[in-house]
Length: 314
Image 1 (cartoon, rainbow, N blue to C red):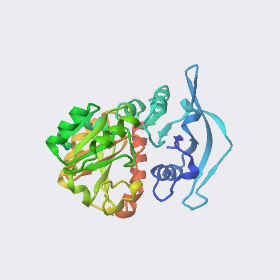
Image 2 (cartoon, one colour; image 1 turned 45 degrees about the vertical axis):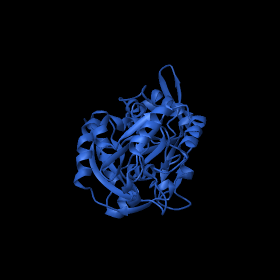
Image 3 (tube, rainbow, N blue to C red; image 1 turned 120 degrees about the vertical axis):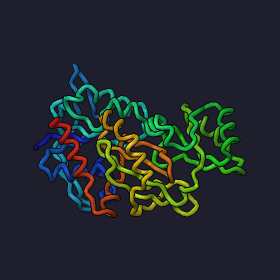
Image 4 (tube, one colour; image 1 turned 60 degrees about the vertical axis):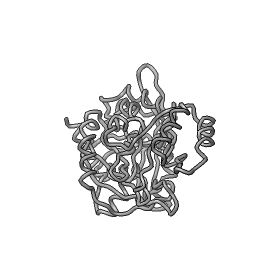
């Protein structure tokens, strides 16, 4: 099966070839003989029901300082592609949401991964609330009084922006911490949306797990170990990858959410688990496959492409 594949992503020049999942997916697509095109999301255009982008043919190689070659720019009809990978990084803002609406004009005749409507309907910190039994006690609110009541009940809490990413804006508020009111004032100044307040999970000091699910099936995991004195284990905040296995609880979580992911066309998903609790479901631009590959000798990008090709055959 030879496919025409367009990748909607951030500038190829800036990717970290040792960590970027989109780069790994592009390498695997190329190895399978697929024709690859790259375009940034701001070049999307819709006219008369036809969705196009200013795209360039892409060749990739695992070579630092020379990891890509781009061909001449062309106006690419995305409706003529077999697959579009929606892989630009958050923030999950109105530009991101608009891109999902535009891509709906070609999906599913052109397979968009992940399904753009379902990406729009599944922001990380909101989608997870449909699986509340798997989560720590969590409040989503802008009401200061309700937040203070939650803090009075649970004492030790974490607050984070509803549409944040990479651990930015996450704060641990201990029982004796007097900074909550100041942080709520800051949040009100920075965001119009409610914030997320969760009971603090002390196991985060030992790290969290990023688990990759492919078409609803658990495929692998990596532990993310935070820096000393840090409650954020994200790789963007200095978290260190460490080999790990899936526990019985991890399998229970994946089996609970897997059918919903599969039904929604969410082929490539990354979830975050702290201790026994599910905290986020990442569907926009999941990361972690290269770290898992190195630690486990796996090839998750091949399994993702197997799932994509199976969808096309079906």
